[in-house]
Image 1: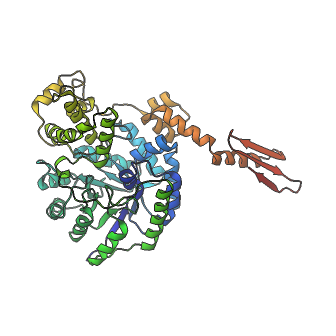
Image 2: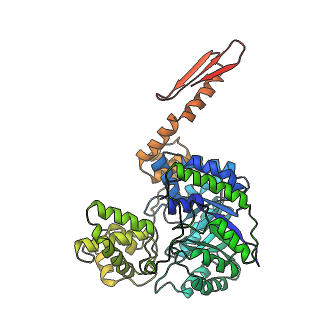
Image 3: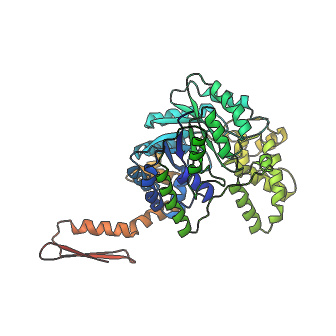
Length: 492
C-alpha cells in the first residue's frame, strides 16, 4: 500500500489533553527522550507556547532548558512546535516583533519543524507567519486546515482555504488538523480528495485528529488509504481519551491494512513504560478510549473546557446551570458567525453563554473577549454574525477601538522595559508572562541543588588554593575538601 510516517504528540498534545498541560516536567521529558529518539518518528511535537507557559507557571522550570535537553537527547529526531501565528502564551494578539523573537529562539534552540494553523482560516496571516518562520531558520513549515463542523465549514470551504496556501513558497506542505476529534470516516473520505485536488504544487499528506469521539483510530486509517502518509499519534498513558490514537495499536492496524510503517515498536514500549510509571508515581490520569457521544457534534465544546466550566459554576453554587450553559453555547456560536470551538474561542463562547444564562437576558453583558472577536482581532469570522449582537458590541467603548493587531512594539522597547543585559530567552518570557511567575522560575533555578553543586564545583576548580569549599542555599549544603595529595572528598 503506502509508507506511513508517524509524528509523536505525547509530550505536547497528549500532555495538554490528558494531563491538563501540567503533567510533563523537564525531568520527565529528559527521561523519556532517549527512547523516543529510537522509535523512528518523522517528528516529535514537543512544545506549544501553552506548554512553555505551564513550565514556568506550575513547575518553576525554564522551558528553554527543557527544549535544549530534549534536543541533545534526540539527535535522530526532528523537534516540532505548534503555533496559531496570532498569539504566543497570551490570550490576546501578540506583536510581530515578539513572535519573530520567539521563532528565532525556537530555531536557535533546536526546533526545526513548525505547524502553522489559523483557527479562523485567515490564510494571509498564516502565510505571513510561515514566511517569518522560514526567515528565522525553520527548516520545514506545515500549513494547516483546521477542521470543525458547522453550516459554513463545507468541503468546498476547506478546499478553497487550502488553495490559498498554494502560492506561498514558505509553506512546504499542508496538513489537516482536527482539534476537537469531529472527523468521521465518511467525512474524511469526502474531504481529503477535495483538499488534495485543491493543490497542484504542494502535498496534502498529514493528519492530526483527536480521539474525543472515539472515531479517530478508524478515521486516520481511512486517511492513510487515501494517501495521507503522516499520522499524529501518542503513547500510553497519554493516548486515547481526548488525546490521539494509541501509537502501538495504530502501527498494528496500519500494517494489517497493508501499509508499511518503519518504526521500532520496542522503543515505543520502552517510552510508554517510562510514562506509565511516571503517571503512577505522580498520580496522573491514564487516557482510555472514549465512547461515541452524538451530542458532542451539537455543541463541540472540548472536554477540558466543559470540566473547567462545571468546576467554576460549582464554586459559585450554580452547577445546576451547566446544561443550560452548554445549550446556550450552541446559540452563541451561531450568533458569532460559527467560529471554531477551540482555544481561545471555546472559552470566549462558553463565558458569553454563562453570562447570558446567569443574567437571564441574552447579551445584556458582552464579554471583552467577544467584543475583540467581533471587532476582528483574530481575523474575519467564517459566517454571518447576528447583526443585533454586532451593533451592540461595536457601540461599546471597547468596540469602537481599532482592531488590535498586536501593536508596533519593538525589541528595543522591550529591552528598555525589562533590561539591556538579560538573555533573549528571558526577555521573551518577561514580555508575555507575569513578572512574579518569571521571577519565581529564575529564583527556583538559582536555589536548586543542581545549581548549588555547579557553583561548588566551579569554586573548587577556581585555582584559589583553598583546601575546603562549602556551598549552601539554606536547605542543601555541599562541601569539598582537598587533601595534601590533591584528591578531593565531597560531602553533602
